[in-house]
Length: 248
Image (spheres, one colour):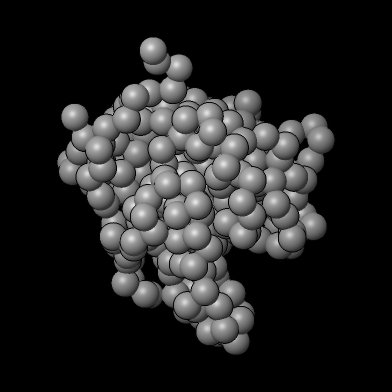
């Protein structure tokens, strides 16, 4: 038995959940048609990544709300397990969160631990998940610079670590870091002998560029799939099966 994993590299969408959901549903439909088991979306993709406190407040969503229940209803007819980046709120504040969702049900969440953003509160844990018998974990963007997340996740049995990214940056900064994003992902894969999958946005406007760093890295650190820069596309890979978490 094998597993098929994937990541989507869409154009960045800011503050328009309806438009984001259209992209999400199209990608999930394609994933089901191609037999993909787990599909990753970019950081905060549902509402659009922001550093602005006012936008964070306006865009955030409570995962126990009726608004989020309606969103989940939209996703319930698809079979693929997705990792969806979003801006979450609760009574303590706002979080940069990745929700693991299958057939309209949230299986769990990961809140970004390593923050440079002041508009979010940090997460405190590295949970593991199982999707179609594939054990995996999630880190988010800046987390990729740090080693303890993948180390803890693989110690718990994770065989794949998914990284929702959002590298939509001011032009000069985007150019400077253009070839650097992948090196952190390769390092994390090699150190932990696990698969690493990233999902990034693409963007080009008057102030920002997002070249996209959507890729799949094997446990030896080889980049075995990578989306073309500035291209809206999906990358996939068939990987070996692994014993699920908690099995004998």
